[in-house]
Amino acid sequence: MKQFLTFLIVIVFFYKVKAAGFDGYYVTNKNDTVYTKVYLPSLLGQMLFFDKIEVLDTALSKKVKLGPNDIACFVYFDDGKRFVYVSKSFENEVRFFERRIRNNNLTLYSYAYSTGTGQYSVTRFKFVIARNDTVYVIVSSADNAKVTREKLKAFFSESNTQQVIEEKFRYRDKLERDIIDFVNNLNTEHAK
Image 1: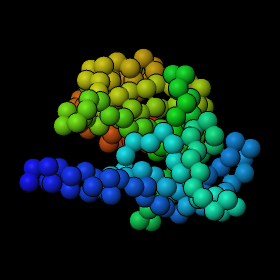
Image 2: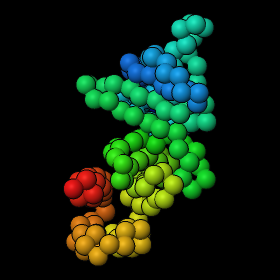
Image 3: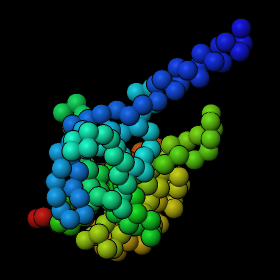
Image 4: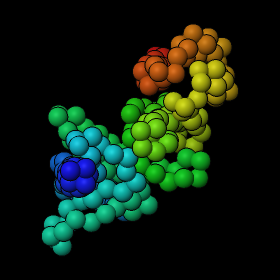
């Protein structure tokens, strides 16, 4: 009975690991836009971390895998929301980053990664706050609040911004919300 149950779990697992298809498009490195289905890996309905995507090549009538070196970006639509992932190199590593906020002053990118294995696996996020995509700071949800504040203070030298950093970034579990609010507020102030 135990072997049958194990076999059944393995069958269900492999049946449920599939690529979720979304309407979307990608932009080639030559700046051509190709509208297609974008397939992202999922497990039991949850998106997995991905370093490649699959797209439907209608000319070849098959799926083709594309990585961050192959395309400039891809976009997909889910439940009325638009998700933009761009191929970027920060810290000498090219990967797909979700572009969360785009502005002339600051742009916010992020990506998820996993630490540990099995039941000890933890999902973490890295956030990149960039000026013109050449000057940037990276903070991680793995960092404690003090390390996050120190990194941000080293990047933002303005005294009023330093004070906001000291007050805002107190808890690691609120990092995503705090980063988004912080970048949005700085962009709003810069636009004035």
